[in-house]
Image (cartoon, rainbow, N blue to C red; front, top):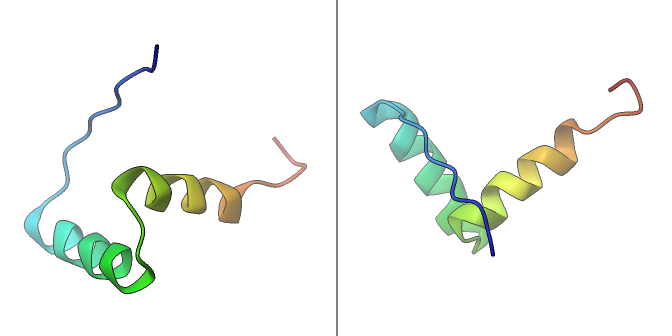
Length: 44
């Protein structure tokens, strides 16, 4: 069973995220996971 994650963003942030998501063909989950991959370093 999965865990649901929710957070709020303002309208401008939503539009920016949605534009990136749509341009790359991601789902919301895919967009979040791609962001994690980009930020993941050995420094954690």
